[in-house]
Length: 340
Ligand code: ADP
Image 1 (cartoon, rainbow, N blue to C red):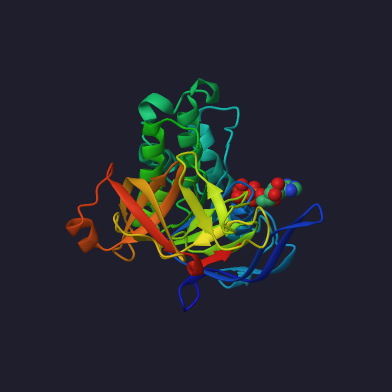
Image 2: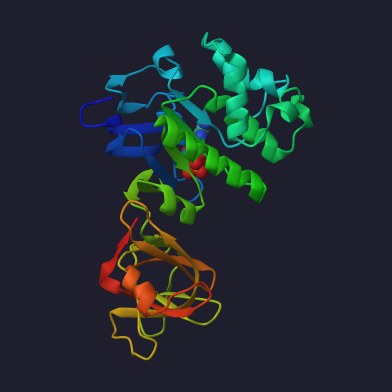
């Protein structure tokens, strides 16, 4: 670990696939022992960043340091400490016990092998007495993912990278996976880096959230991103008409599809007439989340099908009695928008 507590340091990093730049990060430091969330639409570079942090691939340009050192992919120094659970992990053609024990054996860590495998299996809710001898093909999708996670947890890694760990699994498995990862962070100080579409969960548990789009980090996840295509209304203003006939307005966009980022969305007053540089939209609160790090509350407000992130103070939640299901008006200023 570096004196300032960073486990990773990135500088002037660029990653190129088939001649195309898919990730560019000028500077990024990741603190040891924290939980970092990666959010962004498909193709924004989350998996690429995880593969680089997992030391599976080397950045095409720039530097990525792990505990102060630039390491080659699969360097033994890193393999002992860093492990990635990919999006669709497959088990090896052997039983659950041998799958979970595999990484430990490979690293020569066979002391108390049985106990470590059992502990890892219990973390993910697969009790050894029922699951250890099961062959790889006799597990459901959620159980396969949990066994694959147990194989990583058995290593007691310093860094656990999770790529969409709850996508496409049943709710019970998703809950167990989240719980197991958080327990590793709590009990062993494992640094967690998680790409997920489950923003409310990330807001709740993360020390930092990085929002990616087109291979760039452009925010902290507290912003709302609006996607085109944009149209010019008859009065000359720009935006789009939602299916409930509300007008989502934006400033003149640099391109017909350029996504817009809105910050500082506030709860508006329903009975006010918006001034020309303010936009009011009606929506329904779908969730309230507490950000652990800042103590701030985030409301997820659905306007038609678009999900908006609205920061609130605890007083607002209380005095304006904000609850899931409540119809609210959200408000933003056109001059508070930027483009990505
Ligand atoms: P995300 O995880 O956010 O969905 P990815 O990191 O998987 O995004 O992808 C970022 C971009 O890199 C996408 O445009 C994707 O098509 C491209 N990409 C990812 N892996 C490869 C690869 N092995 N070869 C070529 N292009 C790739």
